[in-house]
Amino acid sequence: MVKSLISKKPFMPGPKEKKLKYCSTCGNLATVEAHFDVGNGVTMIEKYCGACAEKLDSRS
Image 1 (cartoon, rainbow, N blue to C red):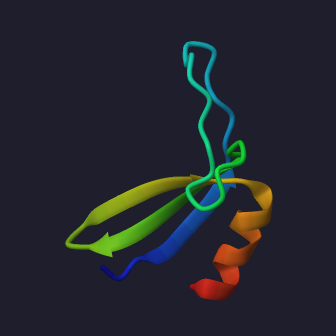
Image 2: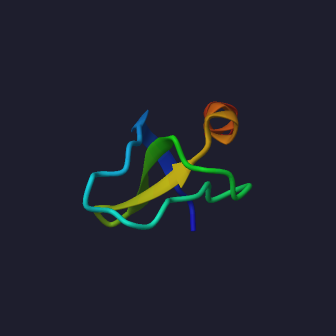
């Protein structure tokens, strides 16, 4: 699967969310939400910590 980064934005869990969200790469608390185009009009959303989100720019 080839995914290309579309956008990144700060992630803050809403007041109704009871579970914390964790980084897809390292497992730390997520602070950034990244949107990826995976083809056929499908967008995948993953959450990352700040350090791992910075690395996304160099991989795309």
